[in-house]
Image (cartoon, rainbow, N blue to C red; front, side, top):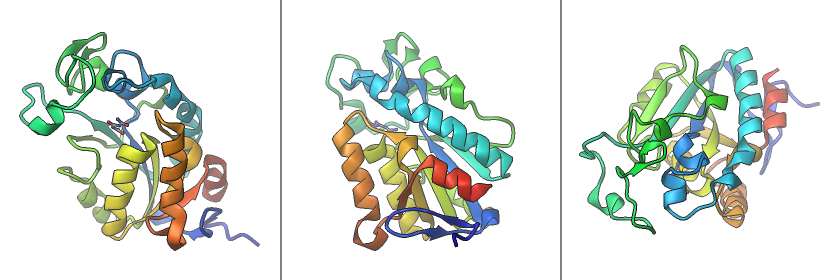
Length: 223
Ligand code: TIU
């Protein structure tokens, strides 16, 4: 008999207290999911990420219905780029750089159209939107404070990309004592093989970084 507060997951079912579980949606921004943004600037096919949108929408809806604490993150920088390390600014494949003007405004800059979360997953009142300058959601943000103040101990981590910002965030969270579960269908990568291996890395060695599940299993456990 599966307990109501148990998510079917790899490497084994994850038990949780519904009062202390939060949903964190990482960087579902136009800059990563649409043409003309940061993802495309790095030479990627952004269409590869769009498979995660519908599962994220369904999970977001279920999390709202269950009254979970929901946090959205966005990767990006101040317009004067003072919070962007030169090493990051100099990176990239093409002639365009962070801060250059693209079809959705300045690339990866706060306040620009491309920096916005895609309309399908628009945050609503009461859901903090956390702006981060790095890949991990804990780096130079108040995420840990927001979670500790609500006694959150378990995180459902969704978003893009699997092996970059989702993985970095899961690793940071794991070191801080949070239990993380990643619904595989709510994440995606520009490199499908990286997606697969990144998920395996989380659940390997008895769950070295956390658990891997899917949106249906988590929605079922939240009902
Ligand atoms: N390039 C890539 O895969 N990802 C990022 O740069 N940021 C996030 O993952 N959000």
